[in-house]
Length: 174
Ligand SMILES: [Zn+2]
Image (cartoon, rainbow, N blue to C red; front, side, top):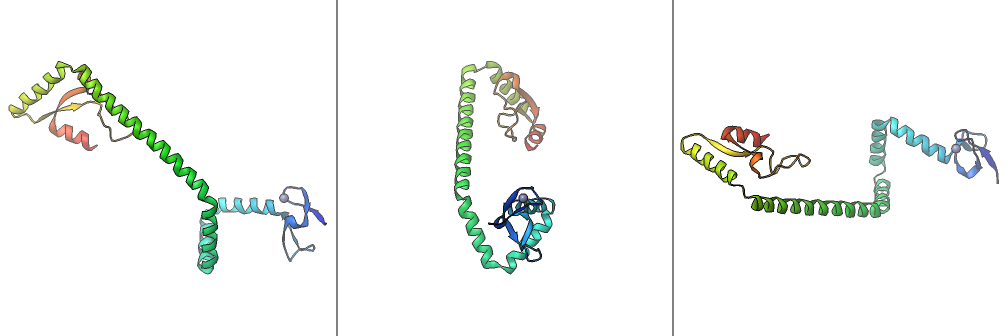
């Protein structure tokens, strides 16, 4: 078996490890298949839009081959995708359970603390409304923030304030 040195990695490899190349004296490319693959990958990385255009053109010219390639790709990735969806499900289930636990704890804490000052605050708001002031009782740090990663407020006296309703609405729309 004939062998030759690769101009890419410098390793001596079997002739079969080099792509066929009719322009060369020995009928094989100067760089090995591994190096050619790596060079192609590097080219795709630095020529993303041209690579996409080439792929699109190839697809249009070879619809059947493209379909076969897609099927092959899907088959190879099926197991990986299955594992991905399993992981997604596990993570989301954990999140849902965590939210439910947090919510239960929140409700429990409200009952446990049952602060008379909170009732008083609501009574004041009702009284102000009866006087024509459009006010609401507002949570300074929202109980259910729009941003999932934002801190969650508690239904406790120190997190409550009486706000003009307009301001409360504006806050809610943020
Ligand atoms: Zn090589």
